[in-house]
Image 1 (cartoon, rainbow, N blue to C red):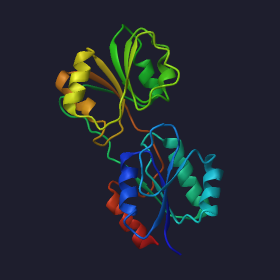
Image 2 (image 1 turned 120 degrees about the vertical axis):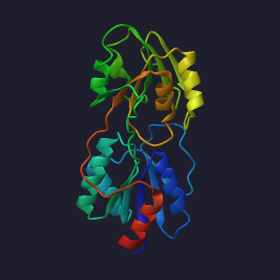
Image 3 (image 1 turned 180 degrees about the vertical axis):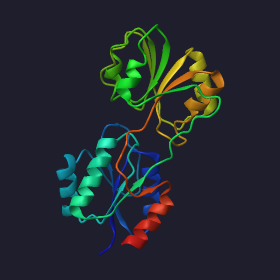
Length: 246
């Protein structure tokens, strides 16, 4: 039976894997949750939309003859990752994660570590500041208890309904960004605080480097804990794994 791979995508790592897989004899589909309007073109088949929880994902695996699943979702997509673990257990197919190492605090960094989005929002209690809120659009409402701040929001897509911050600026752009670009951005808007997820990787790291240079404090949201699983940090290792585990 030929290997038939399902990639849970939405990241740079997933796209890199899709391009490598397209050069092999493996069948493969990359799946997107559909939360972003501008989805990257891919050299393999793609699907868009949720599966309907663990049961829906297990059903998709069975009905489509999936032989291997690679979870290459965002490090903060904890629910999808947990669903993947359980669905693979139910269907008895091998699972691997493709992710990026998390960022490590450097000597000149001024980080305040918090365990989750809720704690990050609570950390903004206090006097008005100029905040770059670099967390995506899904969790913005959790910051509505702190409307005293100016918020710079960098989003991949323009929101259909503007967030309810009375003092905000929305920048619609997709990374990767350079340190020079983010240094200029933070300087132009006189940002004195950044809220960021510890996503890891290079595409979004520029704002952390820029904050270091400008001596800006970062409220860093730590990654959610995900159950142990086979984990790779580059797509070539995943292709080798598929080859030897078929």
